Length: 343
Image (cartoon, rainbow, N blue to C red; front, side, top):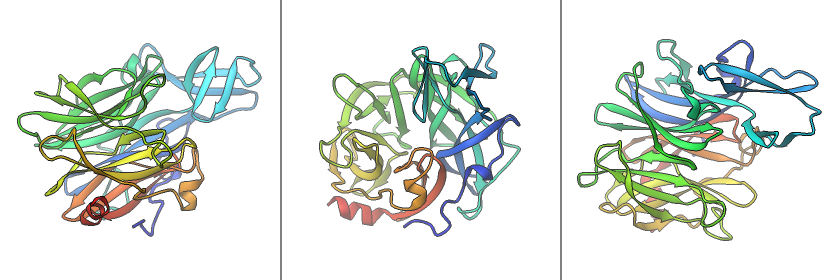
């Protein structure tokens, strides 16, 4: 299942976007085929080099340029209890800023950057803290990127599209805060497009998977809750879709992530009805994959396996995943074997 060469990409394999930055993590790539190759759209998380006596972190300024905020590390208004978030004077900032970077491979294992294809950065105030965890869906000749836009306004879903990976159409925010984990179906069902998404409700309800439909990919509605967390199980705290569901003779096969109260992230599967994907036919009782290797147990945020990208060849799923919020790995699955676990 896991590839023998894991991790296949680590922070030292990618160059920082600026000389003053250091790459802390590679996370959760979108995956697609283009120009005869397999491509990963990596989430690259960077921060400034740290110096004694202060904490520094990147943000976008009003002109959409990356700037650095510096705070004395002794400040009583500074809260560093979460390695991912800095709270300063009551406002949350991220310890790192993420952008998206393209790498390609002819064998699905050895990946390298191609300078002709530019990285994608935050572009306005709704992406001031970075862009994260992109899913890539191919619909016809176009590729649709749905990703998390992060700012002081909250966490939202934004979409761009491209046919050549050099020029992009920006759809803006297609789902407002607080929302993420958005995966498009790559085929219409009837005459409508569908997406899975994950709104968050910390006070009533929870972090559940929802579905929406659209006539044109711009306007989304008829939202329905597809699946909820399950008390006492491996997906008790939050769940979210992986990438585009896979069409099978038995329905749509979706790989999803689930976390428990201890923030342990595992992967499972759901089978959705072919004609009405808001209906769940079956769901994993036990994880398909759980953190067990050293590179999955220890890292920037350990005990995590998380995917939002794969390619499918017949019965074989070639899945790329982020491990411990630090490195990129690969694991291979069988569609028929996953379906068998759901029967």
